[in-house]
Image 1 (tube, helix red, strand yellow):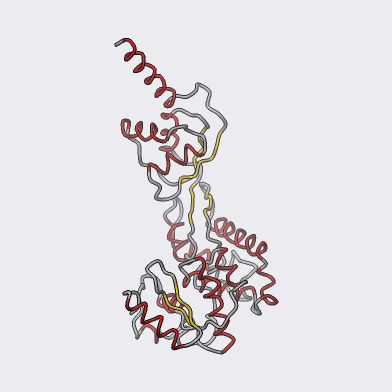
Image 2: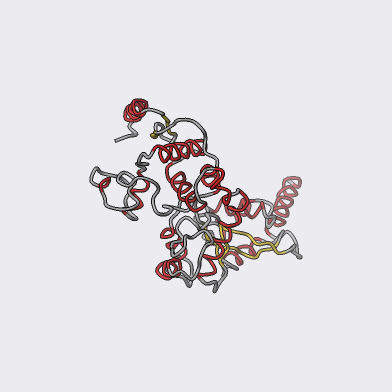
Length: 326
């Protein structure tokens, strides 16, 4: 019995050492909690940042003491801190907010996320984005359209930060990536202007679901442009129709818009989304070949490519047989 009691006591001391590891916590670290994070993922992030040493006992502590809901944001915590101190910090005002911009988002979708941050509104962000006071070096002369020129990434938004400053972060990040991958050399590498390369990258971003398909979608776009063929890209029609449209009817394909590539030959006048680095690289380095068509043939979005209309029709038949094409 004495041995058992000793083991229980030792176990209790060990658990206590997890909850209150030190009277003197370590250095301050900024811990980012992304939007929609689960308790498990938050605990794992705290372990990775050396704030706590056991995600299991932290989750047990939360179940026993409550406080398992934490807002997204960036929090100042300390390495090897006590569980009560960590929970208090995560439950209090954040140092800043984490703004996550996924690849393929539009300015409108980004505005909705910014509008969810304290002190911001969707309408004001859109007004600043469209107002022409915040500009990208890649914008055509006379344009106030930042679509496609805000880089998808996770940004830190500090309390009181203006919408113009947030846009400036995104533009600066885009320019940094563009410089690194050689976007300025688009006229010599692929025969289009840097802005046109961004337009093509946005089409690739919205059309290619699998990374390996991106260069081939780029190949199709360039080949069709070279032949004077209409691009006939569904994503451009959806952009023309506006937010909320997820499917296309025959009538939709006849919508009058410069973005409707079923009716207009050549590129749309601007990007239809904000492309990530992989899509930008695919626009600058498309695969080489004679592909002119593609269609999704697998449930994960994998596409089949073809150089002939007959090949495309065969791929469409395959997709329909799998319940993937209308």
